[in-house]
Image (cartoon, rainbow, N blue to C red; front, side):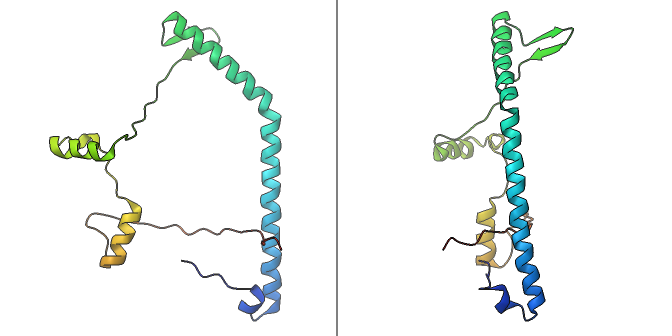
Length: 147
């Protein structure tokens, strides 16, 4: 996994740098908290509008279904319905048996499993044929644990 240094002062011989890191971590947490507070306040302030929009959506959906239409054009705009589909697997093994048995590979989305590919690299020292892998490293900041 990743290596966590026990304390900034032990890891940094220059005390000025250690103080700067401590300060930046505290500032980071303060800014993150301020962003969360602003987002929470924003969500609270728009809550009545979201509720009204949801009510109007329900009303319009009932209207369009009662009218038996997929869309209704008005002078103020067009209301329409869309349908989004998802396909989850109730029995993955039965699905794969079907796909392999019937050679109906169009039923599959083709993508490599990242975890399995990482394991393959650990075991074989190389990626599986035809696979590219990338990694993006980011920085995170945790609060100090409560004492």
